Image (cartoon, rainbow, N blue to C red; front, side, top):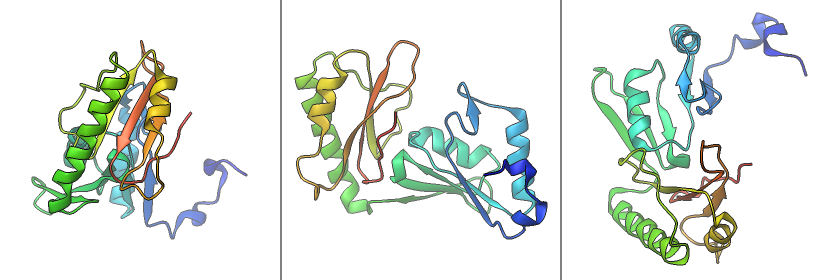
Length: 188
């Protein structure tokens, strides 16, 4: 395999979309570099649609869709797709679940959150963003193995998957994410 910069430019003439992770792919240590922003602008100017795909909460994704030179954002492990409207000011929101099912899913996530907290009293949920309609994330320092066992799906046919994700945080070595869309994956 060759590095992208070694490929002939004609290799990319038919590229219409770039779907990319955000955390530590577009960003580095939580920040979007000016060079990366400029590259996103250049791709957009060339007519290539750029869509970050991330586990980030809806509040962050709303900001990305509004402010970044991207054509939309898939967030919360596939729970939704946000994109800026043609007028440049409003956001068009499409959710995995339709309106009538979202309140049911929200209650299911809340119930699982209560079960986790009951089984692991030291569990605390992520407080970085209150606008998080499709998943429930909780940084965990201790008890991660116990939380992992608790979050394993009992039946593959359940309406959502529960997965333990390991993340990198200054004080915590683990994060578990409860996602309502089934698009989760285990990540080391």
